[in-house]
Image (cartoon, rainbow, N blue to C red; front, side, top):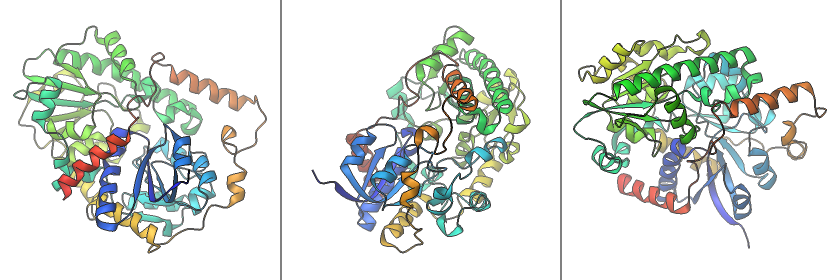
Length: 440
């Protein structure tokens, strides 16, 4: 069977983070630019995708080089395509910068980048990326909170009915960010990238913080004034999270709702207040105009601090947490953070439309297109060895393997880190249809 020709193939890793934006781009690209766009997973059915499509432009959610799975497979199958890094992670802590920097000639010379702002463009250029390969369009995810885009999400009333929540109570939303405690933080899973000592400190901080915060959540959930909604990270298995919560807090109170369904977007928009640790979901809450607070029951290690943390009020005791959660007058908490985010990452037009325009310009050749990846680079890569020839059984390899196994089992074995990341053609069709109704 001949492969289906497509203008743009958009890959999605995490459904909750990326699929809504991808479907908006698919709708806009078709309706306004007459482009054929397909959406596929980097995690599931990759072999089927390779056999099914022949894309002109391939957009991936993450790539620091040919070591980034599954980029080597894509290059082997589609060597003539133009590759774009959508880069859904761009706000890095200091100890992550080396691990997140472009690693090879593919990343520096043959890959196009979507950048949220000058800060990231400068980071890429400093690390050797050709400035012509970078398009500063803003953050497409943050654009979901603005204007008509926000009408795409389920309403508070719909969420209340779906999950049995009391619409009349104050909703306190907590998108947790203790991935290192569950072995789902990339820096911790690969301690060599961020330094073994730092990785150990991050994991210890996350464990202690989760244990303390879980007790706070359980105690506050006994209040009759609120609905407390805790959302585990997409990469953390729900069963592992609830098991850990029970180990720390005992029984889970009725009004402590652990909900992984959906994205943080509809929950932030529907809630009255947002609390998290150092998660960028606090930035999203501030953009949405919600009061935001940083949960800090344990002092942050210095390497976890970053520029925007000082713009968020911290709660360091249960009394502060409970008071801020219940106080409906704390509407200005985090307003400075929202202004900063808009200036730094949302200074241009709607970034979803900007992304669509950029992909269209790549397809039509109306923007800079880098030279295609040399065939010898593709042929010479060994994914099992990260593209570098090393003697098998070396000490470094053994250490990396042991570390990876340890951090994958911090809280015991369980479902895949991608348990919520499988999607179907029907899921895509439903989201695209919803976007058509919103965007017209």
